Amino acid sequence: MPVPPPVTTKKGSYHHGDLREALLRASLELIEEGGVQALSLRKAARRAGVSSGAPYHHFENREVLLAALATEGFERLGQMMDEATSAADPAPVAQLQACGEAYVRFARQHTAYFRVMFRPELAGPDAYPGDDPPGGCVFERLVGRVIAAQEAGHAPAGDPERMILLAWSVAHGLSSLLVDGPLQTGKKMIQMDRDDMGEAVMRTFSTILLGDHLR
Amino acid sequence: MPVPPPVTTKKGSYHHGDLREALLRASLELIEEGGVQALSLRKAARRAGVSSGAPYHHFENREVLLAALATEGFERLGQMMDEATSAADPAPVAQLQACGEAYVRFARQHTAYFRVMFRPELAGPDAYPGDDPPGGCVFERLVGRVIAAQEAGHAPAGDPERMILLAWSVAHGLSSLLVDGPLQTGKKMIQMDRDDMGEAVMRTFSTILLGDHLR
DNA sequence: GGACAAATTTGAGCAGCGCTTAGACCGAGT
DNA sequence: ACTCGGTCTAAGCGCTGCTCAAATTTGTCC
Image (cartoon, rainbow over all chains, first blue to last red):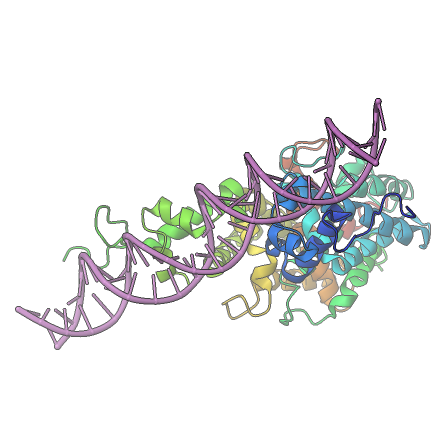
């Protein structure tokens, strides 16, 4: 036996090999193609080549599968924020800007993940399996940088929570407007290229924080 | 004929009287109770006391009903923003702050509307019936005030689009985090009372615009 | 090697859904 | 009085989430 646990797909065999992973990948594809509502466990099962009852041995129900995808998504978002900040200017405001740009980039590049991560059902009362709330990975990456910005005099002093919420809101708001909102469509109203919005908005935010707009 | 068009419900009669309106109200209730996914035309029909096929004489399909609700929602949002701004200090930054607070208040008070207004299916390619894109009512209320803020020297000069997007993102982001995101739940991570977040975040934003945080 | 237990998958089945169609019903205008 | 158009019903199609008993495979202990 050259392959002790064949973690990859065994085609032709009765047992799939790694159905759980295959279902997650198929689900992500379906969401990418048609939104969260386009995901059905039956379709995912069909794509994985198994019967319609098989998924329920790996996920209690549809919502649990979505929660598993959300967990993956938050991990990837955290990674993208880490990569962006470590490559950016260490100045506090530049770090915040890099966080925001990475956040928006993540939302546009991994739309399926983003949609799954921010749904009312996920954050609802004790729906999420994880130990800490879903957005914890974002919050904890903002705390230190906001405090640093405050100490540098580039953010209002006092309880940092307000400033954390503001920074998070900027990034999340633009992301939502781009992914689910009126900025998603090709209709005019705003001329700017959607690819440029993340950088433009976050740069404007930095400008204001630094006070560069006041002569 | 004392009642030319009996716009209200005629109970007991074969014809409902105003089924379209009754379906909209029932749908809003269902969404309020369990989110957009909890709305089914059959349930709404049941609540209105008609058969499961009746709704299709008033709405081509489920998505058209949701679009009708979204239209109502955008009108009410516009009203709330108008009321808030006319009651606020006419200074440009104060006006922007009032816009944002009204936006967040709307999202929290009319969660069902907010959820329906910002869904990918709605803003998708030519899905919305209206003449202008769904968010037009928000955009047009921001343009003048952002330009006024620029002229007052309280916002970065140049193309106002960046600043419009930033202001919109702040309000929309906090609203989304509160309605659909990790701020919705009772889990800690942030101590601030959710009722205070709208004012707190928008006030912080104003502070920064005015440059009050730089000694 | 062979038997047993655990894990995995199947296939049938239930209720609910969106949507369609044919037909029954009502109200208003000629 | 009668027709005609808008409104509603009832039945039905295919899809869905989810359950359950039975069938199949895999790993393990002797």
